[in-house]
Length: 533
Image (cartoon, rainbow, N blue to C red; front, side):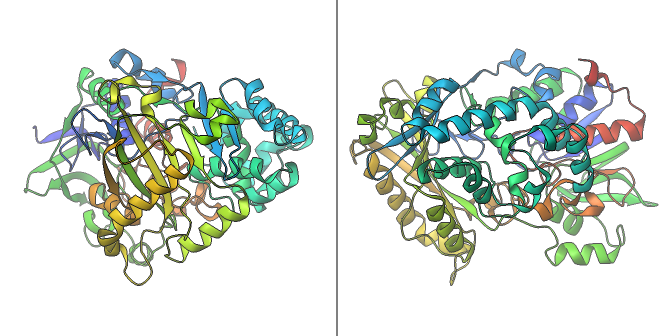
Protein backbone atom coordinates (compact mmCIF):
# COMPACT_ATOMS: atom_id res chain seq x y z
CA UNK A 1 0.00 0.00 0.00
CA UNK A 2 1.39 3.38 -1.03
CA UNK A 3 0.44 6.57 0.79
CA UNK A 4 -0.68 8.61 -2.24
CA UNK A 5 -2.89 8.01 -5.31
CA UNK A 6 -4.58 10.15 -7.92
CA UNK A 7 -7.97 8.69 -7.06
CA UNK A 8 -9.36 6.99 -3.96
CA UNK A 9 -12.64 5.12 -4.39
CA UNK A 10 -14.49 4.12 -1.21
CA UNK A 11 -16.33 0.82 -1.58
CA UNK A 12 -15.68 -2.09 -3.95
CA UNK A 13 -19.22 -2.83 -5.03
CA UNK A 14 -19.86 -3.06 -8.74
CA UNK A 15 -20.21 0.72 -9.06
CA UNK A 16 -17.00 1.46 -7.18
CA UNK A 17 -15.06 -1.08 -9.20
CA UNK A 18 -16.56 0.15 -12.46
CA UNK A 19 -15.64 3.78 -11.83
CA UNK A 20 -12.14 2.77 -10.72
CA UNK A 21 -11.58 0.58 -13.78
CA UNK A 22 -12.54 3.38 -16.18
CA UNK A 23 -10.28 5.88 -14.41
CA UNK A 24 -7.39 3.39 -14.37
CA UNK A 25 -7.86 2.87 -18.10
CA UNK A 26 -7.72 6.68 -18.41
CA UNK A 27 -4.21 6.67 -16.99
CA UNK A 28 -4.96 7.67 -13.39
CA UNK A 29 -3.39 6.02 -10.36
CA UNK A 30 -6.40 4.48 -8.60
CA UNK A 31 -7.01 2.62 -5.35
CA UNK A 32 -10.31 1.10 -4.20
CA UNK A 33 -10.79 0.64 -0.46
CA UNK A 34 -13.21 -2.06 0.73
CA UNK A 35 -14.19 -2.58 4.37
CA UNK A 36 -15.16 -6.21 3.80
CA UNK A 37 -12.78 -9.04 3.07
CA UNK A 38 -13.79 -9.32 -0.59
CA UNK A 39 -14.80 -7.14 -3.49
CA UNK A 40 -18.24 -7.04 -5.04
CA UNK A 41 -20.70 -5.66 -2.51
CA UNK A 42 -24.08 -7.07 -3.56
CA UNK A 43 -22.34 -9.31 -6.12
CA UNK A 44 -21.64 -11.86 -3.40
CA UNK A 45 -21.93 -15.61 -3.98
CA UNK A 46 -21.54 -17.88 -0.98
CA UNK A 47 -22.05 -21.46 0.17
CA UNK A 48 -24.74 -20.51 2.66
CA UNK A 49 -26.15 -24.03 3.01
CA UNK A 50 -23.80 -26.87 2.06
CA UNK A 51 -20.40 -27.07 0.32
CA UNK A 52 -20.80 -27.00 -3.46
CA UNK A 53 -24.10 -25.08 -3.45
CA UNK A 54 -23.53 -21.52 -4.67
CA UNK A 55 -26.06 -18.93 -3.54
CA UNK A 56 -26.26 -15.36 -4.82
CA UNK A 57 -26.91 -13.62 -1.52
CA UNK A 58 -28.08 -10.34 -3.08
CA UNK A 59 -27.83 -9.66 -6.82
CA UNK A 60 -29.29 -12.64 -8.65
CA UNK A 61 -30.94 -11.06 -11.70
CA UNK A 62 -28.82 -9.01 -14.12
CA UNK A 63 -31.39 -7.40 -16.38
CA UNK A 64 -29.44 -4.66 -18.15
CA UNK A 65 -26.06 -6.30 -18.68
CA UNK A 66 -26.44 -6.62 -22.45
CA UNK A 67 -27.13 -2.88 -22.74
CA UNK A 68 -24.77 -1.47 -20.10
CA UNK A 69 -21.79 0.29 -21.76
CA UNK A 70 -19.24 -0.96 -19.15
CA UNK A 71 -19.75 -4.56 -20.23
CA UNK A 72 -18.17 -3.65 -23.58
CA UNK A 73 -15.82 -0.87 -22.49
CA UNK A 74 -14.25 -2.98 -19.73
CA UNK A 75 -14.23 -6.19 -21.80
CA UNK A 76 -15.94 -8.13 -19.03
CA UNK A 77 -16.42 -11.30 -21.07
CA UNK A 78 -12.68 -11.53 -21.70
CA UNK A 79 -12.23 -11.77 -17.96
CA UNK A 80 -14.21 -15.00 -17.75
CA UNK A 81 -17.80 -13.82 -17.30
CA UNK A 82 -20.50 -15.74 -19.12
CA UNK A 83 -24.19 -14.87 -19.10
CA UNK A 84 -27.13 -17.04 -20.02
CA UNK A 85 -30.55 -15.67 -20.87
CA UNK A 86 -33.01 -18.38 -19.76
CA UNK A 87 -35.39 -19.48 -22.48
CA UNK A 88 -38.36 -19.41 -20.13
CA UNK A 89 -37.79 -16.20 -18.24
CA UNK A 90 -40.64 -15.93 -15.80
CA UNK A 91 -43.92 -17.51 -14.79
CA UNK A 92 -46.88 -16.96 -12.54
CA UNK A 93 -48.59 -19.98 -11.04
CA UNK A 94 -52.09 -19.52 -9.70
CA UNK A 95 -54.21 -21.26 -7.09
CA UNK A 96 -56.55 -22.72 -9.71
CA UNK A 97 -53.71 -24.67 -11.38
CA UNK A 98 -53.22 -22.31 -14.31
CA UNK A 99 -49.96 -20.58 -15.21
CA UNK A 100 -48.66 -17.75 -17.37
CA UNK A 101 -45.16 -17.94 -18.83
CA UNK A 102 -42.83 -15.31 -20.33
CA UNK A 103 -40.36 -16.52 -22.96
CA UNK A 104 -37.49 -14.99 -24.86
CA UNK A 105 -39.70 -15.79 -27.86
CA UNK A 106 -42.34 -13.04 -28.00
CA UNK A 107 -44.80 -15.22 -29.90
CA UNK A 108 -44.74 -17.86 -27.18
CA UNK A 109 -45.26 -15.23 -24.50
CA UNK A 110 -48.26 -13.87 -26.36
CA UNK A 111 -49.64 -17.39 -26.79
CA UNK A 112 -49.44 -17.87 -23.03
CA UNK A 113 -51.19 -14.57 -22.32
CA UNK A 114 -53.84 -15.36 -24.94
CA UNK A 115 -54.94 -18.38 -22.91
CA UNK A 116 -56.25 -15.83 -20.40
CA UNK A 117 -57.17 -13.01 -22.79
CA UNK A 118 -56.55 -12.70 -26.52
CA UNK A 119 -57.14 -8.98 -26.24
CA UNK A 120 -54.44 -8.69 -23.56
CA UNK A 121 -52.05 -10.72 -25.68
CA UNK A 122 -52.49 -8.27 -28.56
CA UNK A 123 -52.04 -5.33 -26.18
CA UNK A 124 -48.91 -6.84 -24.69
CA UNK A 125 -47.40 -7.42 -28.13
CA UNK A 126 -48.06 -3.79 -29.06
CA UNK A 127 -46.68 -2.45 -25.77
CA UNK A 128 -43.60 -4.66 -25.91
CA UNK A 129 -42.89 -3.74 -29.52
CA UNK A 130 -43.38 -0.05 -28.90
CA UNK A 131 -41.21 -0.12 -25.78
CA UNK A 132 -38.43 -1.69 -27.82
CA UNK A 133 -38.76 1.09 -30.34
CA UNK A 134 -38.16 3.67 -27.63
CA UNK A 135 -35.74 1.68 -25.50
CA UNK A 136 -32.63 3.53 -26.67
CA UNK A 137 -34.29 6.87 -25.97
CA UNK A 138 -35.50 5.76 -22.56
CA UNK A 139 -32.18 4.25 -21.56
CA UNK A 140 -30.33 7.31 -22.75
CA UNK A 141 -32.59 9.77 -20.97
CA UNK A 142 -33.40 7.77 -17.86
CA UNK A 143 -30.29 5.73 -17.11
CA UNK A 144 -26.98 6.26 -18.85
CA UNK A 145 -26.49 9.97 -18.48
CA UNK A 146 -26.53 12.35 -15.50
CA UNK A 147 -30.11 13.02 -14.46
CA UNK A 148 -32.28 15.70 -15.96
CA UNK A 149 -35.28 17.19 -14.21
CA UNK A 150 -38.75 15.77 -14.64
CA UNK A 151 -39.65 18.87 -16.64
CA UNK A 152 -36.64 18.35 -18.92
CA UNK A 153 -37.57 14.69 -19.36
CA UNK A 154 -41.09 15.70 -20.34
CA UNK A 155 -39.68 18.07 -22.95
CA UNK A 156 -37.36 15.36 -24.25
CA UNK A 157 -40.20 12.89 -24.65
CA UNK A 158 -42.26 15.50 -26.46
CA UNK A 159 -39.32 16.48 -28.70
CA UNK A 160 -38.92 12.88 -29.79
CA UNK A 161 -42.61 12.72 -30.58
CA UNK A 162 -43.29 10.06 -27.97
CA UNK A 163 -46.54 11.58 -26.78
CA UNK A 164 -47.89 12.01 -30.27
CA UNK A 165 -46.76 8.68 -31.75
CA UNK A 166 -47.19 6.40 -28.77
CA UNK A 167 -50.27 4.59 -27.63
CA UNK A 168 -48.70 3.85 -24.26
CA UNK A 169 -46.11 6.53 -23.46
CA UNK A 170 -47.40 9.86 -22.18
CA UNK A 171 -46.31 12.63 -19.85
CA UNK A 172 -49.43 11.80 -17.85
CA UNK A 173 -47.66 8.67 -16.63
CA UNK A 174 -45.68 10.76 -14.16
CA UNK A 175 -48.86 11.04 -12.07
CA UNK A 176 -50.02 7.44 -12.43
CA UNK A 177 -49.38 4.18 -10.65
CA UNK A 178 -48.46 1.00 -12.46
CA UNK A 179 -51.85 -0.31 -11.34
CA UNK A 180 -53.56 2.55 -13.15
CA UNK A 181 -51.51 1.94 -16.28
CA UNK A 182 -52.39 -1.77 -16.25
CA UNK A 183 -56.09 -1.07 -15.67
CA UNK A 184 -56.11 1.32 -18.61
CA UNK A 185 -54.62 -1.18 -21.04
CA UNK A 186 -55.27 -4.74 -19.81
CA UNK A 187 -58.37 -6.65 -18.78
CA UNK A 188 -57.55 -9.98 -17.14
CA UNK A 189 -56.62 -9.84 -13.44
CA UNK A 190 -54.01 -12.59 -13.75
CA UNK A 191 -52.28 -10.88 -16.65
CA UNK A 192 -52.21 -7.64 -14.69
CA UNK A 193 -50.95 -9.49 -11.60
CA UNK A 194 -48.04 -10.98 -13.50
CA UNK A 195 -47.07 -7.66 -15.08
CA UNK A 196 -47.27 -5.93 -11.69
CA UNK A 197 -45.19 -8.69 -10.12
CA UNK A 198 -42.47 -8.10 -12.71
CA UNK A 199 -42.31 -4.44 -11.72
CA UNK A 200 -42.20 -5.31 -8.01
CA UNK A 201 -39.28 -7.70 -8.44
CA UNK A 202 -37.46 -4.81 -10.13
CA UNK A 203 -38.14 -2.59 -7.09
CA UNK A 204 -41.10 -0.73 -8.62
CA UNK A 205 -44.12 -1.13 -6.34
CA UNK A 206 -47.28 -1.12 -8.42
CA UNK A 207 -49.27 1.25 -6.17
CA UNK A 208 -46.79 4.17 -6.02
CA UNK A 209 -47.85 7.26 -8.03
CA UNK A 210 -45.46 8.26 -10.81
CA UNK A 211 -43.80 4.90 -11.37
CA UNK A 212 -45.91 4.29 -14.47
CA UNK A 213 -43.48 6.68 -16.18
CA UNK A 214 -40.75 4.04 -16.17
CA UNK A 215 -43.01 1.05 -16.60
CA UNK A 216 -42.90 0.76 -20.41
CA UNK A 217 -39.12 0.40 -20.13
CA UNK A 218 -39.61 -2.44 -17.63
CA UNK A 219 -42.00 -4.17 -20.02
CA UNK A 220 -39.45 -3.81 -22.80
CA UNK A 221 -36.99 -5.72 -20.59
CA UNK A 222 -39.44 -8.30 -19.23
CA UNK A 223 -37.71 -11.06 -21.22
CA UNK A 224 -34.15 -9.89 -20.57
CA UNK A 225 -33.31 -11.42 -17.20
CA UNK A 226 -29.72 -12.70 -17.35
CA UNK A 227 -27.93 -15.20 -15.12
CA UNK A 228 -24.22 -14.92 -14.39
CA UNK A 229 -22.86 -18.45 -14.76
CA UNK A 230 -20.94 -19.60 -11.71
CA UNK A 231 -22.44 -16.93 -9.48
CA UNK A 232 -22.75 -13.16 -9.48
CA UNK A 233 -19.39 -12.79 -7.76
CA UNK A 234 -17.72 -13.67 -11.06
CA UNK A 235 -18.75 -10.26 -12.36
CA UNK A 236 -17.18 -8.58 -9.34
CA UNK A 237 -13.98 -10.52 -9.86
CA UNK A 238 -13.90 -9.54 -13.56
CA UNK A 239 -14.20 -5.84 -12.69
CA UNK A 240 -11.41 -6.17 -10.13
CA UNK A 241 -9.28 -8.03 -12.68
CA UNK A 242 -9.74 -5.27 -15.27
CA UNK A 243 -8.81 -2.67 -12.67
CA UNK A 244 -5.66 -4.60 -11.73
CA UNK A 245 -4.61 -5.15 -15.33
CA UNK A 246 -4.66 -1.40 -15.91
CA UNK A 247 -2.60 -0.53 -12.86
CA UNK A 248 -5.35 -0.02 -10.30
CA UNK A 249 -5.29 -1.45 -6.77
CA UNK A 250 -8.10 -2.91 -4.65
CA UNK A 251 -7.43 -3.25 -0.91
CA UNK A 252 -9.79 -5.33 1.24
CA UNK A 253 -10.23 -5.08 5.01
CA UNK A 254 -9.60 -1.36 4.57
CA UNK A 255 -12.40 0.43 6.38
CA UNK A 256 -12.44 4.19 5.82
CA UNK A 257 -12.85 5.98 9.15
CA UNK A 258 -12.79 9.51 7.77
CA UNK A 259 -12.33 11.62 4.67
CA UNK A 260 -9.61 14.24 5.03
CA UNK A 261 -10.72 17.73 3.99
CA UNK A 262 -8.45 20.77 3.67
CA UNK A 263 -9.60 24.22 2.57
CA UNK A 264 -12.92 22.75 1.41
CA UNK A 265 -11.34 20.03 -0.70
CA UNK A 266 -11.15 16.25 -0.17
CA UNK A 267 -7.46 15.39 -0.02
CA UNK A 268 -7.50 11.78 1.15
CA UNK A 269 -8.80 9.34 3.75
CA UNK A 270 -7.86 7.89 7.10
CA UNK A 271 -8.44 4.16 7.62
CA UNK A 272 -9.78 2.60 10.79
CA UNK A 273 -6.27 1.39 11.67
CA UNK A 274 -4.92 4.93 11.42
CA UNK A 275 -3.32 4.61 7.98
CA UNK A 276 -3.48 7.88 6.03
CA UNK A 277 -3.79 7.91 2.24
CA UNK A 278 -3.76 11.07 0.17
CA UNK A 279 -5.68 11.69 -3.05
CA UNK A 280 -4.04 13.96 -5.59
CA UNK A 281 -7.14 14.39 -7.78
CA UNK A 282 -10.32 13.15 -6.10
CA UNK A 283 -12.13 10.92 -3.64
CA UNK A 284 -15.26 9.06 -4.81
CA UNK A 285 -17.66 7.35 -2.41
CA UNK A 286 -19.76 4.47 -3.69
CA UNK A 287 -21.27 3.82 -0.25
CA UNK A 288 -24.42 5.35 1.19
CA UNK A 289 -24.98 9.03 1.90
CA UNK A 290 -25.39 8.48 5.64
CA UNK A 291 -21.99 6.84 6.05
CA UNK A 292 -20.26 9.32 3.78
CA UNK A 293 -21.64 12.50 5.32
CA UNK A 294 -22.48 11.59 8.91
CA UNK A 295 -19.57 9.26 9.72
CA UNK A 296 -16.70 10.01 7.33
CA UNK A 297 -16.72 13.76 6.76
CA UNK A 298 -15.27 15.98 9.51
CA UNK A 299 -17.46 18.59 11.26
CA UNK A 300 -17.84 21.75 9.22
CA UNK A 301 -16.99 20.16 5.90
CA UNK A 302 -20.54 20.66 4.61
CA UNK A 303 -23.32 23.00 5.72
CA UNK A 304 -24.83 22.06 9.09
CA UNK A 305 -28.33 22.33 7.65
CA UNK A 306 -27.53 19.65 5.09
CA UNK A 307 -26.18 17.31 7.77
CA UNK A 308 -29.27 17.90 9.91
CA UNK A 309 -31.50 16.97 7.01
CA UNK A 310 -29.53 13.78 6.30
CA UNK A 311 -29.52 12.83 10.00
CA UNK A 312 -33.24 13.58 10.13
CA UNK A 313 -34.08 11.13 7.35
CA UNK A 314 -33.89 13.26 4.22
CA UNK A 315 -32.56 10.26 2.30
CA UNK A 316 -35.63 8.29 1.27
CA UNK A 317 -35.33 4.52 1.65
CA UNK A 318 -37.60 1.81 0.34
CA UNK A 319 -40.41 1.26 2.86
CA UNK A 320 -40.11 -2.47 2.22
CA UNK A 321 -37.36 -5.02 1.96
CA UNK A 322 -36.83 -8.67 1.08
CA UNK A 323 -36.87 -11.81 3.18
CA UNK A 324 -34.91 -14.57 1.45
CA UNK A 325 -34.59 -18.32 1.78
CA UNK A 326 -31.59 -20.03 0.17
CA UNK A 327 -32.05 -23.75 -0.44
CA UNK A 328 -29.89 -26.74 -1.31
CA UNK A 329 -32.11 -29.28 -3.05
CA UNK A 330 -31.85 -32.75 -4.49
CA UNK A 331 -34.35 -31.94 -7.27
CA UNK A 332 -35.92 -29.01 -9.08
CA UNK A 333 -39.57 -28.04 -8.52
CA UNK A 334 -42.29 -29.78 -10.48
CA UNK A 335 -45.31 -27.54 -10.49
CA UNK A 336 -48.87 -28.86 -10.58
CA UNK A 337 -49.56 -26.01 -13.01
CA UNK A 338 -47.30 -27.80 -15.51
CA UNK A 339 -50.40 -29.78 -16.44
CA UNK A 340 -51.75 -26.49 -17.78
CA UNK A 341 -48.45 -25.22 -19.21
CA UNK A 342 -45.44 -27.57 -19.17
CA UNK A 343 -43.04 -24.66 -19.66
CA UNK A 344 -43.62 -23.51 -16.10
CA UNK A 345 -41.19 -26.17 -14.88
CA UNK A 346 -38.42 -24.46 -16.89
CA UNK A 347 -39.20 -20.92 -15.74
CA UNK A 348 -36.33 -19.21 -13.97
CA UNK A 349 -38.32 -16.68 -11.87
CA UNK A 350 -41.76 -17.67 -10.62
CA UNK A 351 -44.53 -15.67 -8.93
CA UNK A 352 -46.13 -18.03 -6.44
CA UNK A 353 -49.75 -17.08 -6.23
CA UNK A 354 -50.49 -13.40 -6.86
CA UNK A 355 -53.63 -13.56 -8.98
CA UNK A 356 -54.61 -9.88 -8.94
CA UNK A 357 -53.06 -6.49 -8.33
CA UNK A 358 -55.46 -6.12 -5.38
CA UNK A 359 -53.69 -9.00 -3.59
CA UNK A 360 -50.34 -7.34 -4.19
CA UNK A 361 -51.68 -3.97 -3.04
CA UNK A 362 -52.97 -5.54 0.19
CA UNK A 363 -49.54 -6.99 0.92
CA UNK A 364 -47.87 -3.61 0.36
CA UNK A 365 -50.18 -2.13 3.01
CA UNK A 366 -49.27 -4.86 5.48
CA UNK A 367 -45.55 -4.61 4.82
CA UNK A 368 -45.47 -0.81 5.13
CA UNK A 369 -47.24 -1.17 8.47
CA UNK A 370 -44.44 -3.44 9.66
CA UNK A 371 -46.44 -6.63 9.44
CA UNK A 372 -45.76 -9.96 7.71
CA UNK A 373 -48.67 -10.78 5.37
CA UNK A 374 -51.00 -13.54 6.56
CA UNK A 375 -50.68 -15.40 3.26
CA UNK A 376 -47.13 -15.56 1.96
CA UNK A 377 -46.62 -15.44 -1.78
CA UNK A 378 -42.86 -15.46 -2.29
CA UNK A 379 -41.20 -15.56 -5.68
CA UNK A 380 -38.91 -18.45 -6.53
CA UNK A 381 -35.82 -18.87 -8.67
CA UNK A 382 -33.83 -22.00 -9.48
CA UNK A 383 -30.53 -20.98 -11.06
CA UNK A 384 -29.54 -24.61 -11.57
CA UNK A 385 -32.08 -24.92 -14.37
CA UNK A 386 -29.72 -22.84 -16.50
CA UNK A 387 -26.41 -22.97 -14.62
CA UNK A 388 -25.30 -26.52 -13.78
CA UNK A 389 -22.17 -25.21 -12.07
CA UNK A 390 -23.97 -23.79 -9.04
CA UNK A 391 -24.74 -27.13 -7.39
CA UNK A 392 -23.30 -30.67 -7.25
CA UNK A 393 -24.39 -32.97 -10.07
CA UNK A 394 -27.99 -34.06 -9.68
CA UNK A 395 -28.76 -31.25 -7.21
CA UNK A 396 -29.99 -27.68 -7.39
CA UNK A 397 -29.93 -24.38 -5.56
CA UNK A 398 -33.14 -22.53 -4.89
CA UNK A 399 -34.03 -18.98 -3.89
CA UNK A 400 -37.26 -17.70 -2.36
CA UNK A 401 -37.89 -14.00 -1.80
CA UNK A 402 -40.85 -12.53 0.06
CA UNK A 403 -41.65 -8.82 0.20
CA UNK A 404 -41.30 -7.92 3.87
CA UNK A 405 -40.75 -5.02 6.30
CA UNK A 406 -37.31 -4.18 7.61
CA UNK A 407 -38.64 -3.13 11.01
CA UNK A 408 -41.39 -5.33 12.43
CA UNK A 409 -44.24 -3.69 14.32
CA UNK A 410 -43.73 -4.19 18.03
CA UNK A 411 -40.26 -5.68 17.73
CA UNK A 412 -38.18 -3.67 15.29
CA UNK A 413 -35.48 -5.21 13.08
CA UNK A 414 -34.14 -7.39 15.93
CA UNK A 415 -37.39 -9.37 15.95
CA UNK A 416 -36.26 -11.05 12.73
CA UNK A 417 -33.64 -13.00 14.68
CA UNK A 418 -36.40 -14.92 16.45
CA UNK A 419 -38.78 -15.12 13.50
CA UNK A 420 -36.38 -15.96 10.65
CA UNK A 421 -36.67 -19.75 10.75
CA UNK A 422 -40.43 -19.59 11.21
CA UNK A 423 -40.98 -17.22 8.27
CA UNK A 424 -38.52 -19.23 6.19
CA UNK A 425 -40.49 -22.41 6.78
CA UNK A 426 -43.70 -20.61 5.83
CA UNK A 427 -42.07 -19.52 2.55
CA UNK A 428 -41.06 -23.12 1.82
CA UNK A 429 -44.60 -24.30 2.62
CA UNK A 430 -45.95 -21.69 0.21
CA UNK A 431 -43.68 -23.07 -2.53
CA UNK A 432 -44.83 -26.62 -1.78
CA UNK A 433 -48.44 -25.62 -2.35
CA UNK A 434 -47.54 -25.28 -6.02
CA UNK A 435 -44.64 -27.75 -6.25
CA UNK A 436 -45.49 -30.64 -3.87
CA UNK A 437 -42.41 -32.64 -4.88
CA UNK A 438 -40.30 -30.30 -2.73
CA UNK A 439 -40.68 -32.49 0.35
CA UNK A 440 -38.39 -32.50 3.36
CA UNK A 441 -36.40 -35.23 1.64
CA UNK A 442 -35.91 -33.06 -1.45
CA UNK A 443 -34.59 -30.14 0.58
CA UNK A 444 -31.10 -30.95 1.80
CA UNK A 445 -30.61 -27.74 3.75
CA UNK A 446 -31.86 -24.17 3.82
CA UNK A 447 -30.85 -20.84 5.33
CA UNK A 448 -33.00 -17.76 5.99
CA UNK A 449 -31.69 -14.31 5.22
CA UNK A 450 -33.86 -11.59 6.72
CA UNK A 451 -34.17 -7.86 6.01
CA UNK A 452 -32.19 -7.28 9.22
CA UNK A 453 -29.35 -9.42 7.88
CA UNK A 454 -28.96 -7.20 4.81
CA UNK A 455 -27.31 -4.14 6.48
CA UNK A 456 -25.36 -6.41 8.82
CA UNK A 457 -23.59 -7.78 5.78
CA UNK A 458 -23.65 -4.67 3.59
CA UNK A 459 -24.02 -1.60 5.77
CA UNK A 460 -24.66 0.69 2.82
CA UNK A 461 -28.02 -1.02 2.30
CA UNK A 462 -29.52 1.13 5.06
CA UNK A 463 -32.67 -0.30 6.67
CA UNK A 464 -32.46 -3.34 4.44
CA UNK A 465 -32.92 -1.12 1.39
CA UNK A 466 -31.48 -3.28 -1.39
CA UNK A 467 -32.09 -0.50 -3.94
CA UNK A 468 -30.17 2.01 -1.76
CA UNK A 469 -32.94 4.55 -2.10
CA UNK A 470 -36.69 4.54 -2.52
CA UNK A 471 -38.00 4.12 -6.05
CA UNK A 472 -40.54 6.95 -6.19
CA UNK A 473 -41.18 10.13 -8.13
CA UNK A 474 -39.89 12.15 -5.15
CA UNK A 475 -36.58 10.27 -5.26
CA UNK A 476 -35.98 10.07 -8.98
CA UNK A 477 -33.84 11.83 -11.58
CA UNK A 478 -32.42 15.13 -10.24
CA UNK A 479 -34.04 14.58 -6.83
CA UNK A 480 -32.09 11.42 -6.02
CA UNK A 481 -30.80 11.11 -3.35
CA UNK A 482 -31.34 14.83 -2.66
CA UNK A 483 -31.04 17.82 -5.00
CA UNK A 484 -27.62 18.90 -3.66
CA UNK A 485 -26.09 15.53 -4.53
CA UNK A 486 -28.04 14.57 -7.64
CA UNK A 487 -25.26 15.44 -10.11
CA UNK A 488 -22.68 13.22 -8.34
CA UNK A 489 -20.72 16.22 -7.07
CA UNK A 490 -20.84 17.20 -3.38
CA UNK A 491 -20.35 20.48 -1.50
CA UNK A 492 -16.79 19.28 -0.80
CA UNK A 493 -14.60 19.98 -3.81
CA UNK A 494 -13.03 16.82 -5.19
CA UNK A 495 -15.52 14.52 -3.43
CA UNK A 496 -18.00 12.65 -5.62
CA UNK A 497 -20.84 10.21 -5.00
CA UNK A 498 -20.85 7.22 -7.36
CA UNK A 499 -22.92 4.46 -5.75
CA UNK A 500 -26.49 3.20 -6.00
CA UNK A 501 -27.79 6.01 -3.83
CA UNK A 502 -27.41 8.08 -7.00
CA UNK A 503 -29.44 8.16 -10.21
CA UNK A 504 -30.81 5.91 -11.51
CA UNK A 505 -30.86 3.48 -8.52
CA UNK A 506 -29.62 0.09 -7.38
CA UNK A 507 -29.78 -3.18 -9.33
CA UNK A 508 -26.87 -4.27 -11.54
CA UNK A 509 -26.93 -1.41 -14.05
CA UNK A 510 -23.44 0.16 -13.61
CA UNK A 511 -25.23 3.43 -14.36
CA UNK A 512 -24.42 5.40 -11.17
CA UNK A 513 -20.70 4.83 -11.72
CA UNK A 514 -20.92 5.43 -15.47
CA UNK A 515 -22.77 8.70 -14.99
CA UNK A 516 -20.43 9.85 -12.21
CA UNK A 517 -17.55 9.07 -14.56
CA UNK A 518 -18.94 11.53 -17.10
CA UNK A 519 -19.10 14.30 -14.49
CA UNK A 520 -15.60 13.52 -13.18
CA UNK A 521 -14.20 13.50 -16.73
CA UNK A 522 -15.63 16.97 -17.32
CA UNK A 523 -14.16 18.29 -14.08
CA UNK A 524 -10.71 16.76 -14.68
CA UNK A 525 -10.60 17.41 -18.42
CA UNK A 526 -10.27 13.70 -19.24
CA UNK A 527 -10.72 12.34 -22.73
CA UNK A 528 -14.04 10.50 -22.81
CA UNK A 529 -12.62 7.61 -24.82
CA UNK A 530 -15.45 5.29 -23.79
CA UNK A 531 -17.93 7.12 -26.02
CA UNK A 532 -15.91 5.98 -29.03
CA UNK A 533 -15.56 2.31 -28.04
